[in-house]
Image (cartoon, rainbow, N blue to C red; front, side, top):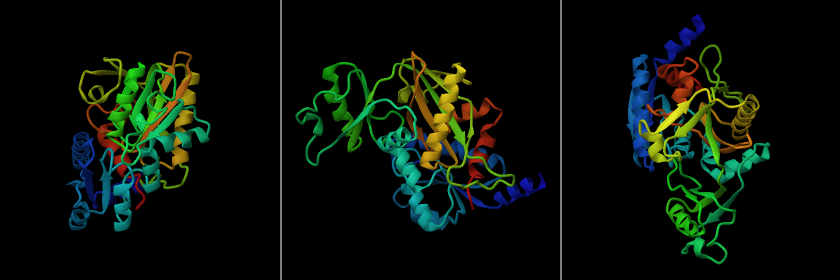
Length: 332
């Protein structure tokens, strides 16, 4: 215990930079996440400086002389390996997954390929890419869905359901793809799974003195499976971030074999992508009890309506303790 307390004292002597805001379409959520994390760490006695990320961030990080970065950036330039690469070059340790893992997890198509390669069940999907100078959806054979309806159409590299649409009628397909291609150069067309939506939060396990494990294929601590029950029937951006729009059940009331399958699938995805720090894997469970992996978030939200803090609270981990565990999983 003395060694662990001594390690925590050492951490509190370091200058922690909370990187928040950013340049993605999820900027406002990132600001909320960052402020919440910064306040939690300050309440525990850490030296914290908030840094709003823009194109001048490298200079400001250098001037701030932070020793560790706590990443609270959602979406492009924060969750996709970009900021991680900058920090690697600058020699500043940071929370969460590395450059390659972040980039792969941000790409839904690559993530699904990785998951399927290790035996994780995923919905059928196809990718539609935007031609240079032309909108591919109107090319021959592309005005109709490549999969049976209904399907989900979503940008390949966006989060928070931005640009996502459920297509139930043939005439809705082309407009949905056109809209999705407005957010990214490619979109996923994915079979729509009717059923229950659940999510699994995972935390990297640190050793006895608070130093991150850092090993490839490390086994994370799995928090209780949480079920998301949106009152509007679809867990869209509004349902995610508006109080009262969604109900949550944690632990989720699902059959033990299904829970076990989801837990094993989450671990496989974590290890296949070599994730670090904290991550959240999303699944659908159909009427027959089959689970389907959808995607993984490498910098999940940490707001008052976010899922990871809810799952942590269910096993007695306070928001402050959760932030501290994420921070001290960093390998210095």
